Amino acid sequence: MIHRILTAAAIAATASAAEAPADPGKHVNLKGGGIALHGYDPVAYFERHAAVPGNASYTATYQGVRYQFADAADAAKFKGDPGHYVPQYGGFCAYGVARGFKVDVDPEAFTVVDDKLYLNVSKSIREKWNKDAHGYIAKANDKWPTVQDKKSGVFGGLLS
Image (cartoon, rainbow, N blue to C red; front, side, top):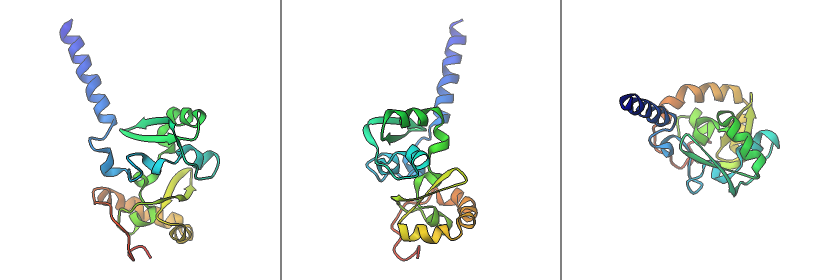
């Protein structure tokens, strides 16, 4: 009996560890003080079509990464389906990923395409991104498996 309980506990611990990456900051942009999206509310991008700063009173953790929300209702929506609300490419600039780079973002330079959240380094890059979003998404999807392990950096002239 004790052996079964210990085995069940070991299986549960393994399952929990599999849900959260060992180093969530490696593949997720946490440049906002250790909080994803620079502290902006991920639900607001979808529900309000706006970049809304989160409030430290309303937080949730998903796969080892902390998110903030404008209010309790948004936090509850996120907790109900967190995978839907998290940004693509770990919250790094989608255009940068398409070009092979991992770059920080301006949380106000966002686009929701096919019910997925994409962020860009600046509003001017977002304009360029939006001219062929589906094409850039295809490129970024192809490159993300190798780009995700790169160090994040500054874009300089690389994204222009």
